[in-house]
Length: 406
Image (cartoon, rainbow, N blue to C red; front, side, top):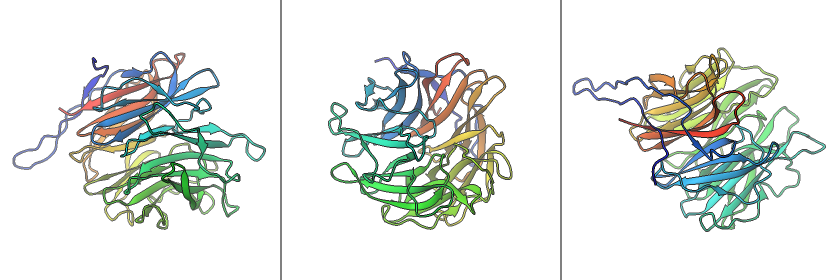
């Protein structure tokens, strides 16, 4: 099968024989890239790395003006995606770039699909619900879709993330309406999937999370489980926090603020944080308008006890939705979207393992419309997927680019 891939060459990191200083060459990116599922309009791409090389891309395909269905495809070698698979029973999926549907493959070969749907009710006409379904035979058959919680009081489940835990089970976090306080915000819940492939041991790990920002659940190489999210602090400040579990999610540490941005806003920014791990510690990226504007970066060398002073990735107020991935050689790539002169484009920044900024550029040009990028490492290269269209009147579609090292 011919590769329907656009190969783009990322900056080469060249080691000097004497000083061993890393240098970069210009990153030149043009166009929207390769379209996936090009016969249909769609949105909400998500990427998952399974094993050493396989990559899953999932997205929502528009069925009508009001209906979408969850689709996915697998590239066993990381770049050549196979046939599109439609997840049965997902035709209630509700598109939202911060509430991304996700399809993952577990180490024992099972496939888990999760997606958000609308759940209007008398208590909250804007509430949502999260469904999941399993395939135990490589996508041929699927279990009936179920909601995350069996508690009928859980009527608003949104902004979730899933991760493979150190015992190879699957953990999930989400924002939930159930809470033991009358303070503003949603509770952050955590649960695992048991041997019967249903959620188990669900519990709240915080009670004042910002209601409409993406969460991030991350398992590090030492087996610690991290959660990052936007918290409502002192009833008015909406800043990013980090909490960690050393016992596979049974208990979590007291949340620590990543940066004292002190962003006071009576509303939801709709842009969550990202976390990754280099050889030197944890890395974070997020959006704020507190004491500055745009996307920022910080790191922690002590597992989230303390954090470096934030460093701007993009100071544009329109810069949002950052994601991070780490190359096998240790370099970090941060992607985000921001407004341009005649459109919306995807920014891309290279940093060293220690957080030093090496290069900032753009993955798409300034005349098209691209947003909500996601990124995964392909060894020393990367794959980036996003929603996009060439001009305002076009239907939105799914695009991706492979970024290969020289």
